[in-house]
Amino acid sequence: MKFKVDENLPREVIQILVAAGHDSVSALDQDLGGEPDEVLLRICAAEGRAIVTEDLDFADLRRFPPNEHAGIVVFRLRRPGLNAAVEATELLLRQINVDELPGKLIIVESGRFRLREA
Image (tube, rainbow, N blue to C red; front, side, top):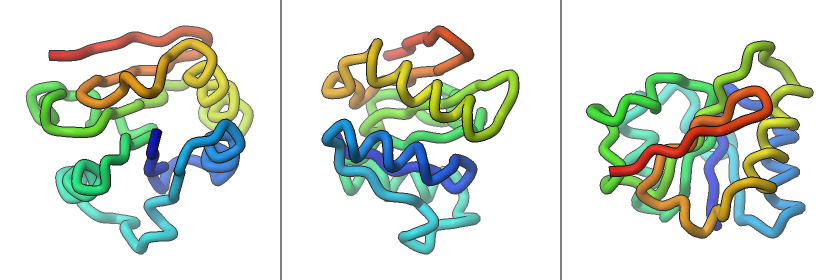
């Protein structure tokens, strides 16, 4: 699976995804920091990449219909920070078949996740 990790998450998230065999890049490394959500998601869709973010705006199914993207993963963490982001990434990889992510919204919370699709 291919991922783009949003600017609001630590680089360790990318490292974990890459170590698990996924093609993963940072939005910042591609000079996409500060881009509007719609632009970022359109670029992700064109690249066939799911976005991984803490930006709760991406969880709006009306704004970002599932059939229009390669997948959205939103980390909704009670205590943001490196450890929580690492735990959320590891939970995602353990619990979800990431190859089935296109067209879906996954909300990863502390110790659990929710799946939304069209």
